[in-house]
Image 1 (tube, rainbow, N blue to C red):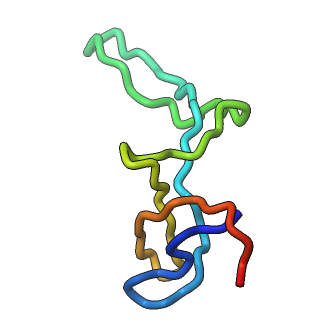
Image 2 (cartoon, rainbow, N blue to C red):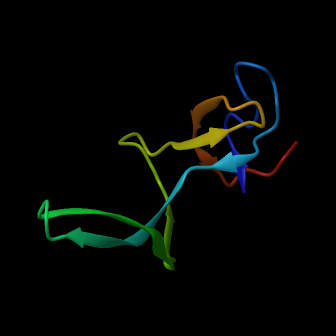
Length: 80
């Protein structure tokens, strides 16, 4: 895969990660005294739901190793 902005605009670093979404079911506990729920500390991740997030303009969010993020489009063009 290639991106129209392949390097971080802030530091020039290479793309390291792509923002994606997965469905997760977080286990809850119930406290009868307070009648409230809380996270139990474990979750089931459904990896088959993983998909790349796109903004309304069709761009994806990329990250460099320094933690900077930016938007780019996925490109099918051959590298020069």
